[in-house]
Amino acid sequence: MTKLQLLATLLALVVLALLGSCSSDDYTEPDIFKVTPDVRTRINTGTRMVSRSEKNAFNEKFTAFLNKCDEMGPEYTPYQYMETEEYKELKEQILTSSPASCYLLMDRYLKREPHFFSFILNDLIETAYPETIEKIAERMKSSTTVTTVQESMEFYPQVCLETWLDTIEKP
Image (cartoon, rainbow, N blue to C red; front, side, top):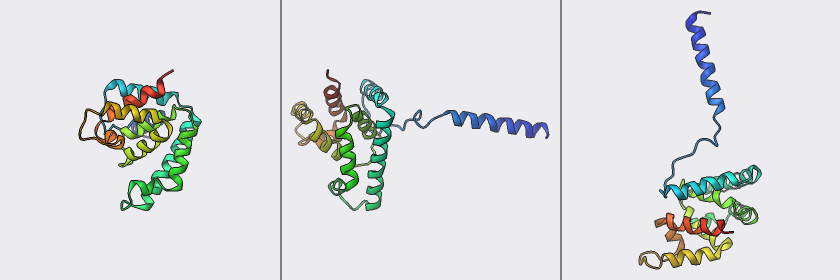
């Protein structure tokens, strides 16, 4: 082998070693919704508290739901997506797992996957944390344009996520 071939091989091995050492958990997608660094830090800390088995179960159910939405196509409404068996399984997973799984949901919401996520969060918060719905509604009373928690999630994610975080983090 020539020196050039040896150098190219060595460089390729270094690149492969670097790529192999990076896990997909280390890479985070950028957020679509911007929130304060404090809220983002609280969510990131919470996602690290979730057990690996719980995280895997959540990701499996969430991916199955997204795949079902893709299968159905964009002509359906969020409510029709939420009537699927895959959504019911995802919802059951979230309702029966620890409150820490909510952090995974918040993380996905900030990345805006899927686009109708506020409907999902509204449904799940309403079911699992009804007191949070009341607190969000109370905080949003001063806004004359927002009438539902779902709209609040769309227009004021910071307020909604802070309120939800306070609820699941209280002793």
